[in-house]
Image (tube, rainbow, N blue to C red; front, top):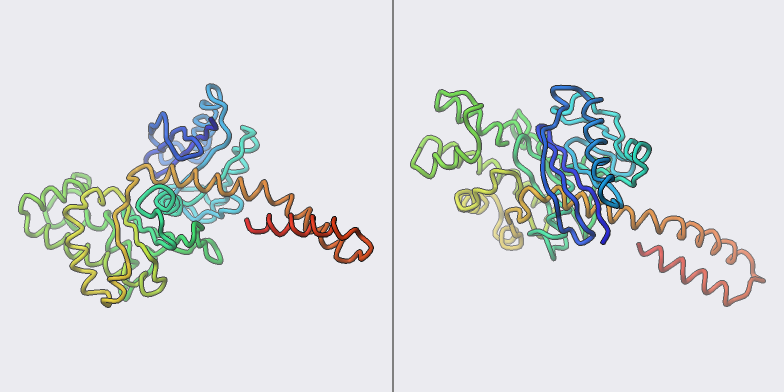
Length: 338
């Protein structure tokens, strides 16, 4: 059974585990991310050490990585680091893993990976198109069409949290869980560090009316952003991820009411809005999906190029045997479907 090391690198923690080619995870665990405390070099040593430790005990076929920030998916370079990854812009994990550990590696943005995971094995299964929104420290998004990410011209498609949506501030500054907690702390006269999304929702369940109003306002802001995405892209399915989405029983009725106000009936009825089904495993599973898809494409690239050259040669060599021409042309055409 083939085994792959999967990493989901967040600002405070690195989740990791082994997986097989069907997306089944084993030996899952997490450890604190040292980048904020010890810097980039220590962080890179931490990642290399983690992957290398698995190589000692397992025959690992590759490393599949998900991490925050704007990533060039074709090269693995961090083109714009997330705020909690200071100094990581310009770093290329694909090259580092390949050179230091002699191991195939692919890196994808964390929200993109979560979207791929939900498409493959989560609540996005069977959808022709889906938009995944992750709401947490910030707000990120990813659009999947027919099993493929839509990266955009400079690999920033889906960065919905940066849109201002008619406001003076980006969507994530007003509607992320970080913003919600900041407002709740001010309302209650406490420090933001004493609250989190789960605790806030519990306080709402126990009858805290001011927090209930605040949560409703925030959920309505989510609906406003979701509506804009639906009108622009018209996805078949919208998947909502992030730790706070575990409070689905409380949030779903609020969101449904707000979406009725924001969307035309024809759009509302034609769009399925679902909460993420893979929870904290979405990034790990999506990173693996990305790895497997890119490795498959890479293995087919050389035969396609070779057959394209041969086809060109035979098309311009009228004396070549007709049977050979048909074989080469047919083989090249079949590979190009991938």
